[in-house]
Amino acid sequence: MASSPPPPATDLPPTLPASFSASSSPSFLHYLRNLGSKAPKTMAALYSSPSPSTLSPQPPGSFFALTVLTNLLNEIERCVVLRMVALEWTEDSGITERDFNSWFIGSKKDWDWEKLNDLCIISLNPSRSSSWFVKLRSPFHSSLRSALTSTQKHPWSLLPSAQLKPSPTPPPTLNELNAYTQNIWNGILHYLVGTKNTQEPNPTVLRFLRETGLMDVDAKTAGTKREKWEITKKGYDFMLKDVSEQVWSFVFSYLQTLQSTSSIISTLLLLTSLSHCTLSEGYPVSLLTKSHKTLMPKFKDFGLIYYTSGSPKFYPTSIAISLIPGSLSSSCGHLPSPTSVHSLLSLPDQTKNPTLNIIVQTNFTVVAYTSSPLHLSMLLLFCDKDDYMVLPNVLVMKLTRDSVKESFKRGIKCSQILKFLKKHSHPLIVDADYRIPENVQSQLHLWEKEEVRIKCSLAFKIYFEEEEKEVERDVAGWAEERGGLIFRGKGGVVVVKYEIAEGAVRFKKRRVREWREEEGGEDDMIVY
Image (tube, rainbow, N blue to C red; front, side, top):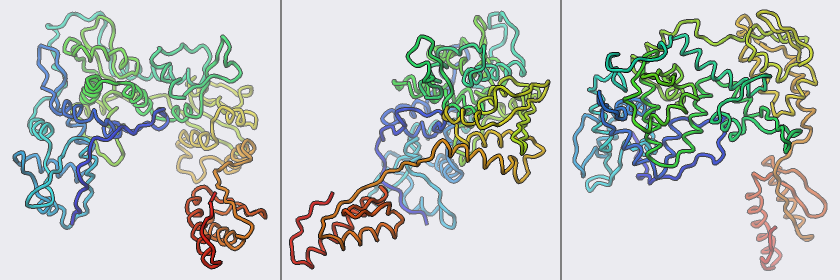
């Protein structure tokens, strides 16, 4: 039997971190749930956007946003919402608690009321005849009904060439589109790892790399005219991610900077609509709204769209089409439009990124099968820079104490190096018990321990009067039983772990009170 839901939640304040961490970007769902006071207006706008006109610029219809948002629900939530959309109700009616709970008899209920309330999908109302009744909110209910019967395939109409001005350049091929995105991100990663003669990224990307802590000023050049920026621990985590995750980090960072509700709505509409586009299909720039045209340069910087100056069309890339589903929690399925799925599956093999296959030998030699300069720069973050060979399709490098410890000084951890080497293991050894020899793993851990010999942790010091020897002994015993005793000195001092400090103080107060009662005195102790 389903349990009763919590009372309707009020608008919640945003809980996203003040300083954004690109190494662990919150999901698209997390962003929507933490819109706070902007949520009702934003979600209503996403649910009730009109269908686009063929001839005039309008935002894409709500069908595309609704498809993405319903995919944020788990199977049971989606099934119940689709069942409820067929029902009719007035302002003062809905599905009663009894009827709603009957839907879940004999099955495990997996229903997140807070999530559905945050997404402005349902409303919970008190009822005279029962404790509550539930119904879909008006914008979501009416728009989902329309979306289920919609035959619309594209967010923007595909105008005949005769209605568009001639393009100064030919349309890009599938290979060119994929290479375009990959070149943008290869350039960013080259700059991140410090490859020589690398062109500096555009200001938008550069600001992101620095403000999010992916790069930091080298301590040796800080304050000088020639400040040198280098990769940080967060930057190395970022580098290990897939391209779609890296792009989402940039997009999420941009969403965090938006203050007005209208800007948030405009950006979300464009993102959800791009996920329903067809790869290599050109869409008329003239049908974009003014706000969406303003977003074009930023989305171009992120590799989401291909667009040349003077062209009547823009072309979404494969990253833009898969971006939103890729950012969702793994527990949420995603159902992009058949058109976009077909276009992604039709990608030729040539568009795949250059591969990196690594074999680590017991003598600390790293053999990397690759021809990419980017992969060379990535490996040089922890391999010997002065002793390596570059052959036409293979790199032969060495893991040395000095090279590995130099990477530790940059903030790179042993676990990150091992993760990188395992992630790119050669296919012939990927199923082996030890993709990296045990002696290599052990030595890397030992080198890391040389850097960090002392582990700092919070502690809490409790003082006792000279006559409280018994209380001191009992408190020390209480802490030791819980694995939280750090030190017990002779001068009436007990040091415990900070996690149990509150419990230890309460236990001391109780024992002092009992001891005072036994002695017949008054409880006038001050506990420090």
